[in-house]
Image (cartoon, rainbow, N blue to C red):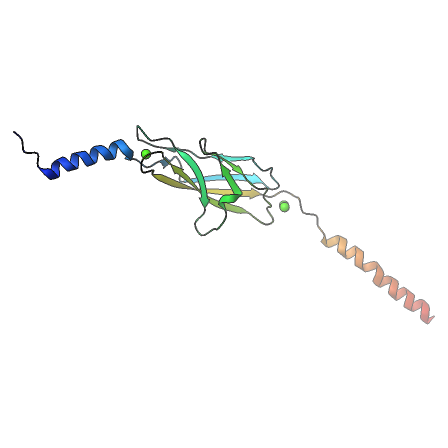
Length: 159
Ligand SMILES: [Ca+2]
Ligand SMILES: [Ca+2]
Ligand SMILES: [Ca+2]
């Protein structure tokens, strides 16, 4: 007869349950994902693909979602991520003259009970295109001739 004792028995059962349910959180392949997109992009264009793995044998189906970057409100809505594949696309058309870089958080959540999650940083750089018309020179030409006309008229009136 072996006296197992209460505490020892409880410990084994607790560990067994923990491994069977969800022992590992997902882990992103990279902590930071850099991507760039030329401004005036089409909505839905692919920016990058994020990937996370999970070491559990069961409950390791990973689903991806976006969250706002820390300290930045409403940046998650600028992008979309495929729940299953992790492909990140642009949800808006970016304007370099208004936005140079945008950050958002990508979250990977496993299907264990309870679910565990991990996050990575997404940094998207908007590339500049020559899409701004130089308005400065046009204004200068437009305003000079009327001033000359006024002087000419005055001289004619005196003579
Ligand atoms: Ca897991
Ligand atoms: Ca622009
Ligand atoms: Ca531009």
